[in-house]
Image 1 (cartoon, rainbow, N blue to C red):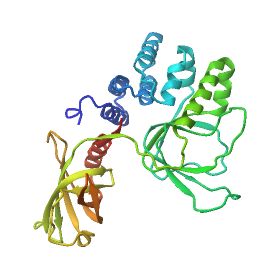
Image 2: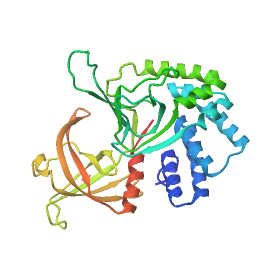
Image 3: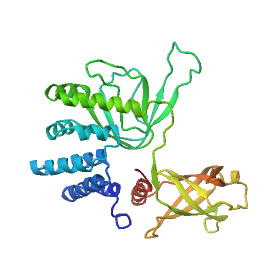
Image 4: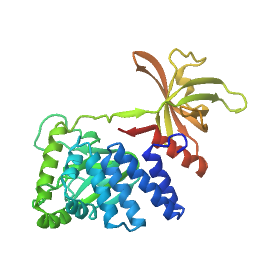
Length: 343
């Protein structure tokens, strides 16, 4: 995959994580270094910081290398988001004391992060992945009592400011995908703000800017993404896999380790009704843009519907993948991570 997309920091990060599992620590450190460099070049700040944290866990950094990273991060920081502006406001000493208090968390899908009524004890920063938040209406309010579910597409969450005041969660937050977070506790922030009062001023600005940017919290927000075009060929089978019922073509709109949403080419007429495809066995052949590799995955159709894309009506199929080998699932995971990445 790196030969296909050599400048993609997400792939460098995926390989570094894989090398850690294989206990190839020194090589993993090199890939965490390249991950951080590529993220910085793209102006992606928090994932660059996390990659550096992971590298420093393997190889103890020199004072000079830390300072070089800090200056590079400040120089290339686009300052386009509240979190980026906050990190850019930190002096070198403040940056070190803040980053060294961060805890990294990896959570699987459908994992509860915090419940309604929990004490707000942490500031969370989203490195990757997607979360859902369910907010319950006030008991004294009127109207629809149904809880509102929204996608958390912002960079931070955790109602901890002002730091001196205890607050309790007014929502229920859980992961919608594999999620990587870093967090810093309210106690740690209170402690470091005693020595570095300007960090508290920066936090005030962070929460104010965040509140202005996300002033309508109950609106589904879509992250801007760059799709990598992935052509798909689809063989639909009955029982005998040697004789496909029909062959279709299209592209993958959504792709994960468990399944995919496939959009068929506009104007394709199938010999059966769309609903009759549900439950059929399928074989999917997909390739990245330059056809340098091909994935062949088996699964079944779990839903089918007509959608409008670019003012044309197309058929969409929801595919659930069969259980696959560890090698294939690992390759698909990297492929899926690279298909849509936040920009």
